Structure formats: structure tokens, C-alpha cells
Length: 627
Image 1 (cartoon, rainbow, N blue to C red):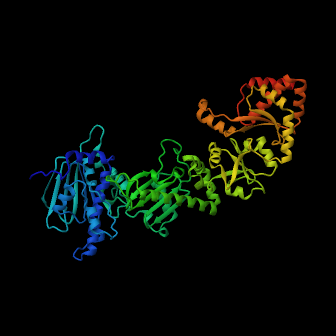
Image 2 (image 1 turned 180 degrees about the horizontal axis):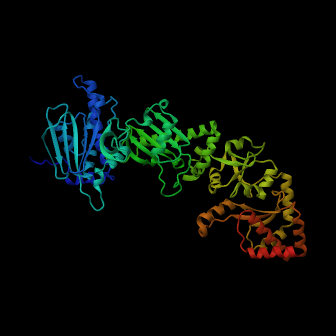
Image 3 (image 1 turned 90 degrees about the vertical axis):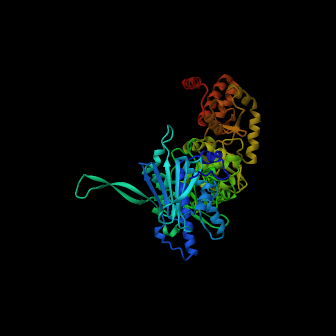
């Protein structure tokens, strides 16, 4: 019997199919099972249109058999089978698909065939050095056998086969130094691959599996028994009606599918039909993944096409600020590339991703409105990621996220939204005030906070490094600008108070110049202020970099941080220490120099900053105490 060469394709093309298009050897089983499912689909469809074809639905199945002795893995189906010419055309011509041709012939009949490209079959050569296909078609009396060892070509001859369908026998390659092909002859591996890639094929995938059973009439004796098992679930949970799914069903699917030990905080189950048709089952976890803020964490949703897993993590389906969402998308509308491993980046994928983004956002908004306690629980876990999202990509997404972010309120003593803050603003107030610090307690004690609260204004307390960058990226909310109470932008004095303060600062500008020089010009200026109530002194920043931002950048960049806050040493003009300073400037400038150093160090400590020479300051304090 003469060996035939592959039509229109060279040795190099087949090598490309096997070695380049597919990057993951284990997907060969997915491809062969999908082909078997398509063959059964065709049979079922023809039985609906041809009264001469009788099909018993319960008999339709895909069977897998392992023959370790002969190193054979056998995948068979009882579908429509292939004629001799179909074997020649579909398997002898690389990249010709019988499924795609059948689908085109029956356009408009809503067929959900999985295989479309005709190259999936050849992925089996990644693990097999010989493939035998025995097939009997509905349309021929005789069965035929197709045999190939790959690049050398193939043979076709008549054979004996009972019943219609196709039987594929893979002779698994011997193990190599870096490749353990024998694992594809292990029951556990085949079960694992079916569960991973083909769990939702609509027909049962059966295999004889060996189990240990206790012998009857014995206490501790066991025997190995082989039983036929169905390896796949067949009906995916996301294709069921919501009314048929319990909360436990959703939770159990999540914990087993995504390896979480806690049930999710929120389940989002949606089905869309129209120009883009898909099912999505999304979960918001109740806690951060342990590797969430590491390089190892991969965002993305599982992607299925008609129940067949195409990608384990499709990153393009989620924006970075929703990267904590887990789940899956199943669609028949996706344009897959030739290997069915990757997705063409086309309008379908982008359209689904956009819909999913909007769905997640709307569900979070609904949670915030209808279940405040649940939303606050969510925000305490994932709020940081939403804040990152506002300033990522140069703030492109700030308007999408501005109503989802929250900060602690000085008046409400809890997390509030920016919308809620603005709804309580005093008449004439145009700024949203905030203060930064390591903890709520430290912010509460800041001298600058005291005066703003004393005038009845609400302050947002920012405790995370990302917080101030978030507000600066947003710049304003509902036409109200954000103002840090610890900067020179704060403006809560009346016109009269401002004028009086200006006169007094002008009067003592020589004293302030001397004090500035006393601390080696470490501040831009020294001046009196109205912003303090009981505290004698504080540091404020001028310009775009605040003290808290400087600390954040220093923690991240260390000595490489070149961005420093420009600071001003402000002295409470109503504090008793003012008269002391005025007297010292007149009578004892050396003492004033020491006082200034202490006051500056005090202001730095209040802000959580270090002192350049703590020994000097300690000695100065002891000297003053001893007088």
C-alpha cells in the first residue's frame, strides 16, 4: 500500500503546525475531544432532518481508553463518522476543516460546532509518533483506516469497524530527558485534562477507572476494581437558569474552581444576547490573594468557547483596577486564531471586556447604594486598587471610579464617599479638605487639623500612600477642588483676619529672617499663622509636593528621591510663646537661635519627620529646663 503525501503542504508546514502553533502539549486531548463532540453534533443534527437516521440521545458519548502495555491512548466517538474521501480531504489536507464546511452548508441553523480550523487534530503529533484513525460514516457501508507517522505522509485502507463513528489511537512517544510523555497514559492525568479543558462538553466523556474496594466479608482486605466513569460535568453552571442555582452552588463552584478557602463576597452572573452573545460568571473575593501585589499575580478571566476552555487567564477581559475579580466568560462569538490557544484581538473581545467592566462597576454602585455594610467590607479589602485605578494611565479612568472611592470622615467617624462629603459642605465652602498621616489617631492630633475642625469644616483623613496621589490626579470633585490642610493652599480666614496677619508678619520680618538663618535656611520662610488653635508651631508645605508625598516617595525611592517638599515654619500668633520670641529677638538673639531650633524640631516630629541632630536638640532642651 503506497504512502500518500500530505496535499499542498510540505514537511516544514507540518513541523510548524506541531512545534510552533501549539505551545502547550496537553491541549491535544482538548482538540480530539472537541472534534468528537462536533461529530456527534453533526449526527444529532442530521437525525433531526432525516427520518431514516435514528439516534438515541442517551447513547451518544466520547470514550477514552488507556492501553499502557502498548503505549496507546484511544479516543472514540459514536458520531457521524468520515467517508474515505472525507478522511482524504479532512486529514490529508492540513487546515481543512470538516466542521467549518458543515457549518457553512447549514448557515442560519444556530449550530454550535467547536472545531473550525482543521489543525487541532495534528496537535496529537506533539505527544504521539503514530496516529491511527478508524472511521465509519453514515454515508458508506465500509469503514476506513487512516494511518500516519507525521511528516512522512499517510495511508488509507479499508478496515472492519462496528457502528458509525471514529476511533483515534495515539501511540504515545517514548519519554525523553525533558519530556515525560508517559504521563498521558495515566488515569489521573487524563481526568485532570478533561476537567480542565473539556468539563463542559455536552456529551459524556467516559473512561474505565480503577478504584480500590473493600472485599465483601473482610475487614482490611481491598481489591482493585475497574469501573466506567463519566469524567465531565457536561452542563456548565453559568448556562443554567439563575432560579435553578442556589447560593451554595455558586459558592462551591467558586471555592473548587478558583482554589479559595473562603466563599466570595459577591457573585455576578450575567447572560447577554445580541450582537455579542456570552455568559459570564464573576466573583468578587472576600479577601486579597496572598500574591496580589506581587509580580507573580496574574489577572484575567477564564475564557471558554462553547464550554471548551480556550485561555486560563485572559487579561484583556479585565481592566487593572478590577484585577481582583475572578471568574469566566463563555462565548460562541469569539474569533479564535488557528491554534485555538490565543484570541484574535478584535472587536468581539473588546466589546465583551467593555460590557464586563460596566457590569462590575454597576454592581459595585448597587452594592454601595443598597448594602452599605457589604460595600464597606469590600472597600476595606480592595479600595486601594480602585484608588490606584484613578491615577493609572494619567488619570484616564478617574471619572469612572470617583464615586466608588471612600475616605474616613472627621465628622462622621467612618468611611464616606466624595458625593456624601459634598452634600454636607457648609454654605460658601468651595474646597474639599483633607489631611494625611500614618494613622487616623496621628492625623487627628495634627495642629493644622485642629483649626479647620474648630471652624466647623469636615476633613477627609488619608492614611494610605496612594490617597493623596489619587486626589491630586482627580484635582476636583463636582467643581470643588481638593485642599490639603497642611499646605499654604488652605484659606479659611476672613478678609479682616488676613489683613491683620499680614501686618504683623511684615512688622516682624527681620525676626523671621534671623530665625530662618538660625536653622540653616531649611525652610522657605518663618511666619505667624492663624491656622493653629492650641499648638505653638507647625510645618506646612508650599508647591505641588506635600510633606506626606515626600515621605511616600522617600520610602519608595530612598536616596534616589529628588522631589522634596518646600516647607514653611508657622508659629501660632496667639500662643504665649510669641511674646517670648519677640523679647529674645530684642534682648538675647543667641537664645532665640536655640529656641528656633527646638521649635523647628518640634514641628518636624509632629509631622512624623526625623531630626537631623537629635543630640543637639536634646542638649538644648536640658539646658532650658535647668535654667
